[in-house]
Image (tube, rainbow, N blue to C red; front, side, top):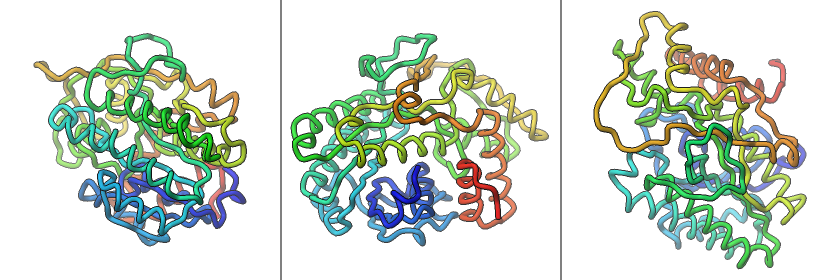
Length: 353
């Protein structure tokens, strides 16, 4: 990313109180952008948004729901942004089985409302809608999915994100190309990092078990995912948004931001790696009937490497070490905003002062 591009830029972030949104807001603010956030209240307690004092880094902070079209139009009009990142979502697979209607309302109609707000806001130049690696029709292939592969999804979450992709493409062709607004989608892998306390995610569940001296119970230890530190896809979204503003419709498409091939690892590899570094930590597989989850998932990010010059900076091993360092710092009562900013600088290759 170019610091010169982001300095003073007005940026609107939906979902800024979430895990990814909090990291992105801190990164943008640190680069000199004026960050305007629109989101529901932080989804967990504790939350990265609160422990890292993200609100202090914002130009404006609006608590609102993307299902409220009028509210998001007002907030975007007041911010008059040049760049929009849409991260607000119902992001949990297992929860989507419990609340499918809510999942589709947030992830599909919420996307429509955000795009309608952008249509009504003349200042916007570039938009990145953050979806997921699970938007592809999963064939359990051993090779990575490319951006041209069919979209789909067997569970409500994956399906809703595929729908969000289709909605974005339809709005691009019907409205935004004619209005000179460049809009793209970003599809990332399974992100890990400090400050994630969501339920039914591997790393947060592991830390909860560790902190309470419990053995973690795991549903699918052989499931393979494209694991990556949260800063990896965020760096891709930033590079993409910048290129959309500079290059326009040439970059307006779907983009994968996944890890290196060797970092698509099974769940058991992740847990064994962590347990080897933490005295007393352990896990076990549990049998039984579970809702469907993909067994093998991998992304091909050749397009981002070739056209954007983007590539992952950290190996999975380093991502896990950095996440463990963050969690230990939080347990030790350190200033977590400083810790976050230090990890962002480290990811950029900036030496500490």
